[in-house]
Amino acid sequence: MNDSILKIENLIFEYAQYEDGENVRAVDDVSLEIERGSFTAIIGRNGSGKSTLAKNINGLLLPTSGTVYVNGIDTCDESQIWEVRQTVGMVFQNPDNQLVSTIVEDDVAFGPENMGIAPEEIRLRVDEALKAVGMYEHRKKAPHLLSGGQKQRIAIAGAIAMKPECIVFDEPTAMLDPSGRRDVMNIIKDLNKEGITVVLITHFMEEAASADRVIIMDRGVILADGTPQEIFKESDKIREINLDVPLAVNLADRLRKNGIDVPQNIISTEELIEWVLS
Picture 1 (cartoon, rainbow, N blue to C red):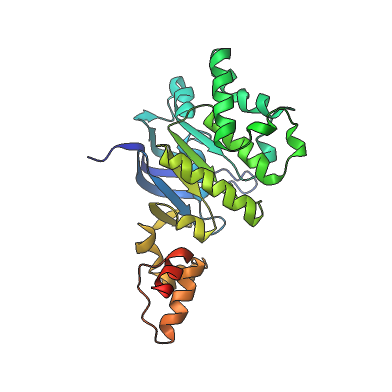
Picture 2: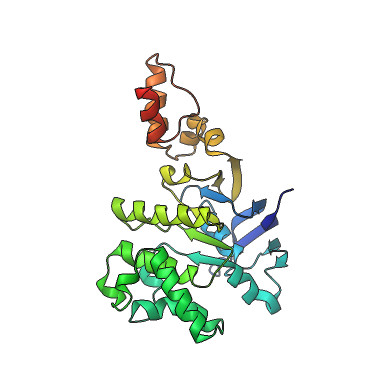
């Protein structure tokens, strides 16, 4: 039986434009469910509505119409908004916008402190979270002395310390170098393996290929929804809406055009290398 932690019904979200009086519809009648413990990637061009959708998931934005449920709770229910945000944590693109303290461990403790957690439990949570992202040895440092990738790890630790059932990552690697992106993605995969539901907003196709499910958004609507293999085998359609495909998919397409029968289900570099060597 499907156990959904997130359920979205006919979600419409519009941004008010005060100059001309006309609203801009960023999400247009979207309905979907996210299964507990799953790893879903949402991709799309800039302005496709994917980040707006992400912010609606934990009540940072509230629907213009339609409903978003988190563990059965309507995000518009003001009396339970803290329950919603404790269930769904968020990590954003720019780590500097998420760090609030001058010491790393104090920053990670900020969320649990605001939840009213006992000091002894906060100490345990902070240590566990920092160890989970490989930043325990930096716990006494000032965040501004860390690299971008290290700062993003601290932001993730802050989300982990609140013990959410789901974490929404809104383009968390967009400002990182390849090494930092790889480290953050490894942390995200490990969190999912531990049972945390992951929703990843990204424009890196290799990251999306790591998910269980890929959703493509364009102009506020869902264009496609399926496994990475189902989505990326339609590479020509993806390119038509000005999106890239994973490098392995691109190489496989070029090999097929040159008469080499590459299996359609190859979407990662590792899979392509394994096929070539087999």
